Length: 149
Image (tube, rainbow, N blue to C red):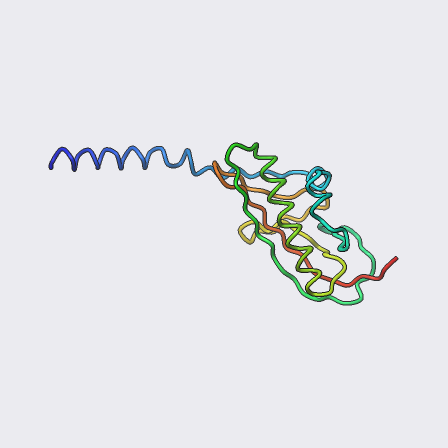
């Protein structure tokens, strides 16, 4: 019994020592344009809602219908961080588009990365965090009805 207890203790110490290697949380700043230029984005985003990132100018907002956060994770196992991050970003964009349509909005403006509730505003890039098996993107935006041009 004593040997069993020692073995379990050694195993516990070993697992505690190697766990940080598997608990990776790599921050990536990636281009929005590359994620939006994928075949998946063309197929999955309907296009009825317009998106404006960071301080990007947009047509006059007639009505503001709310603000929301889309926090999406994806399986990153066996994928490059970039591919997993682009997929998580697209999932977050699809969720924003669906929410906009539910609210009757035709645009999502002031979109910022919002990972762990920390804002990162950019007109060109988004933030993603990738681990050994999960990648995640969080986006926050305002849902508005803009004047049609």
